[in-house]
Amino acid sequence: MKKIAALLALAVLVVAQSASAQTLKTVKDRGILNCGSNGTLAGFGLPDAQGNWTGLDVDLCRAIAAAIFNDPKKVKFVPLSAKDRFTALQSGEVDVLARNTTWTSSRDTSLGLNFTGVNYYDGQGFVVRKALKVNSALELNGASICVQQGTTTELNLTDYFRSHNMQMKSVTFATANEAVKAYDAGRCDAYTSDASALYAERLRLANANDHIILPEIISKEPLGPMVRQGDDQWFDIVKWTLFAMLNAEELNVTSKNVDEAAKSDNPEIKRLLGTEGNFGEQLGLTKDWVVRIVKLVGNYGESFERNVGQGSPLKIDRGLNRLWNKGGIQYAPPVR
Ligand SMILES: N[C@@H](CCC(=O)N[C@@H](CS)C(=O)NCC(=O)O)C(=O)O
Image (cartoon, rainbow, N blue to C red; front, side, top):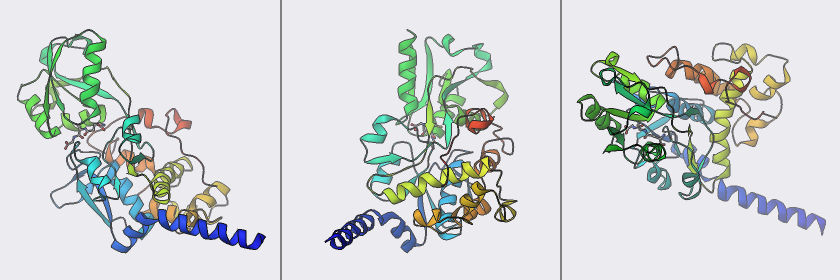
């Protein structure tokens, strides 16, 4: 009797697992990961003239591909506008959405999608012409402000002015390109977006030095990848890919030293790099899944510095995105 019950339980588990294990299988069968990206945002998602994509979000997709295929190039990047990004994930056009998307309650609950973590803690800011002689967002009463549609940016803008009893005229555009161009052409007094994007977009202005970013950060914009609800294995894979990159940084495992590190006696490193335990297999991957990610893409800090930090034209300070033990709030649960 006990045996039958155990067998039944196993059967239920197998059925439940196979019912929910579709995305990994689909991706493996297809031989390539479809990644929903920003196609115009330096530092996060942008192809160069040769079609080579770079960015912090791009690296996350490359890391997933490295973990699955041992090849970070097995990714098709699908550029998505702010408006179309969720539909593309819902419809299955992409397997994962990694496109500077703010984690909010309604997006997490009402779209049939789930956020898997935060790969960049951001906040909303403003850029203005120095000639306007404004030093604070609180001096923007009556200003016209260029902003992109379909973003949390648009909503926060209204809230901010309302809560400070200030007037403004928002001028909205379907793409950031159009909004930035309009601001540059003098159609608005200010342009607003996620602060990280302001650094990237300021570089596109005709005379970047004629503009300043105002000190106020008016919102919380935790940016992270999303997957469809209903596939827990895939949810875990995307979630733990980011955690793997963060844990690698915390344990000083880099793309340069990962082979050496794989010989380490440190139990945390052994678990992370799969020389002890079967943590990769538990995700449906291989023992060396983190070795692949770190060797082929890098740890979180390497990716940050190369794409948005000191090794990039943006030169954004790590700020909140420092690890928890270095004064930031980036924190990954342990592999064990
Ligand atoms: N994080 C915000 C804003 C995301 C967003 O789409 N930002 C714009 C302004 S920087 C952008 O990336 N636009 C790029 C484009 O439209 O090509 C959100 O999730 O709604």
